Length: 452
Image (cartoon, rainbow, N blue to C red; front, side, top):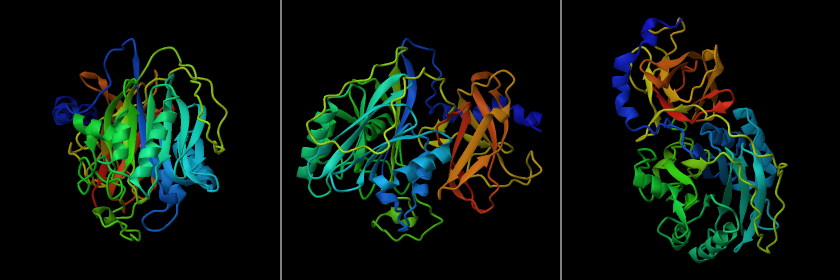
């Protein structure tokens, strides 16, 4: 039973929230002739599914991907035989059907680049590059607009090879319609010739987010030009200029499990303090994608006369869908990407204890209030329509009971969602939380759990 105290946050709550709302990108403006939909992209070298504990675990890989709720993912160092493992794990963990397009680096190997998405795949293509490298391409329909998405992994031996490959990549990508997004491990920092070659034609999403003040990482890996994805920043999300894409934010999340110090694969950085699911950090970029009411037609790329690898498990193209309603959007502090979340009894911020002696439930588990927009309940629907989940740093998934959902008094656009923390007394550190409504999953936000 939710008491009047919980329902009436009113003025004191909004005073608590005001510092965070001022920094929170809220898509609540009136409709314009061109609609805008959020697009989250992930770039990650998964190191053949091997964590820094020297344990190969593709379910852990998929759990890390799922925890960020991306729309499109580009992965490096993926054996073709393990693509089904990743796809099946994503299907199971997200409740969605994921599509894949895998392209080997060169003839004679099974290692390659993998594109993953739960949106309709319109078409796929690929090209071999110099120095036994390749690029995978997938045209993905996002909210009625086609996006040309490329995943690659450039040579690790010489910058001169990478400069040639970057040129070949740009030449290949030019055959595809805007907007274009290129992700991957470029094996060179932002001060190298290969990175400069890319930024002649594409924006570097990390740099653009830094310029906006919306790039985030973690204290042991502070925001800067060279924020580490490995020993330096070598993994990228590039996006084409004049493309209807606007960067919202970018982040390099902390992949360490600081409660698990069994690190075998060491890089000599502070990332060795806890086991990570790969020796690379992932890179996340959040965009606003402009779409109009008319679905785009499928582009017809002009293939380069280079042998094309046979893709693995390419799905049958799906008809362009009618744009769906926006998913719930959980509010975050733009400076840290942490959730705008309050203890429902004390009105304090995280870290939260798993249990609270004085709370609204007999089980003593802590209730946490999240805040969101686009929580469009149907007439008669209650909190039972909301599904909340959390993922811990080891990939463990928790279902979180939802105790209340309703609009904040005086703020018709703002919703409060009260969740109950997991029944796991050993849990501590960061958890990634999502909510879903009518099958649409929100962005992922981070909440800190205090040690027992």
